[in-house]
Structures are given as structure tokens and as C-alpha cells.
Image (tube, rainbow, N blue to C red; front, side, top):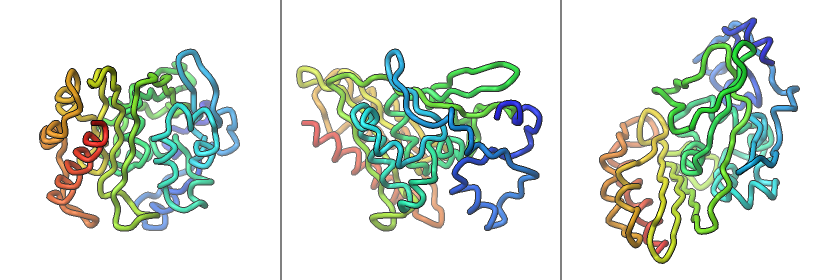
Length: 264
């Protein structure tokens, strides 16, 4: 796959195709060619690693739901995988594809940010490198990935025993909906206080975003729902065909406030 990517950087990598085919049918893209990754099974599956798990880029949402190691280490990621489309999409769509698609509404992306995931990309010329996912997105549907690189796998650190994970998706309907707001969090509670926090949202800015002001307001004290008020400074929602900026802002704050209240 890396040899083909180096030789044909203009070609579009194709895994499950659950987003690419929609874009082609809509006339939104017209790639000059494709690199079919589906047969590259070394890029699929879950493997134990020193300090965490490696998840191959071609691992499907169904694979995530069924792997006991992922269920134990990343229950919020499993919950996100269960919300992506219908079962047919979950059987074909891949974690790497959700990352590469770079949609601000990508369901797994806020969770991966909350879990401090690192994305491994590789090229034939330079080998592999790891990118923290909260620095991967440089703009709307733009990634810090070179034209000759492929996303190969994702590293998830082993969670702390005191970590609480959370995922919440708000859409037009309960299932098979594109997110109006999508939320992922990881909070470490020790001795009644928050000692570490990661809060991330999707569909509230041009990219999925970490929320550093909220995180800073949470750490060092007992869970306080008032920390959700700082979210206004961390997000920049817009009006579009699915929702309004005001609705997204209101729902995001209320969703975060509800989660923090549940920790008390």
C-alpha cells in the first residue's frame, strides 16, 4: 500500500468507502484513481502494546464493538462505534476512514481526543511517525498528513483505573443520524477531586476540538457543573443545514453540564 501511495499520491485511498462513495454519487469529488486498501489486512485488527493498544486503520466499527480489549479499555469508543450508521455501515466503515475523512462531525473523533489517542502515519520514503490526534486536524477536512503518507494504525494508552469515560451524540433522530453535537470525555476522579480531564466536541467548529478552558476549570476540585460555562470560549459553532450555532452552543453546554453533574 505504501509503494502504491508513493507512486500515485494523487490517487484516493479507499477502505470501506462508506463516505467516499456518497461523495462520488453527489458529484462532490472526482478522484483520478483509487488505492484499494481493503486487502491490506495487516492494517486491520487490535493488538496489545506496551502501555496500551494498537488499533489498525482498517478495523471496522463492528470489530471495535466485538473486541473485549477495546470494550475494557475504551468503552466510550465502543459506544461511538455503535452510533455510526446502520449495521451495514458498521460492518464496512473503518476507524482509519473516520479519522481520514476529517469531518468535524466524525463520531469517533472527540472520543479519540479524550483518550489521548495517537495516529500513526507512514510513507515508503520516511517510515512511520505518530501524531497526537488533537494536533492532526489543521482546518476544515484538512490533516497534517503528507501526500505520500497513509494512516496505518491508532495507539490508545492504557486507561487509569480512576478514569471515567463518556460519549454522547445529539442528532436529528436516535439512530443513523449525522451529529449536530458529538461529545467525548475522560475524567479522572481521585479522592473526590478531578485530577485529570479531557473534554472534546465535534460539530461545534471547523474541526473536532479539545476544550482546554473547560479542562482547566475541572482539574483540582470536586466536579463542578459550572465548569461547563467555560465551553463558550472553546467552541465556535456555525449555522448549517443540520442546525444553528445557537442550538449547538446550548446543547453542548447542557450536555457537558449533565455529564459533570453525573460525576458528583
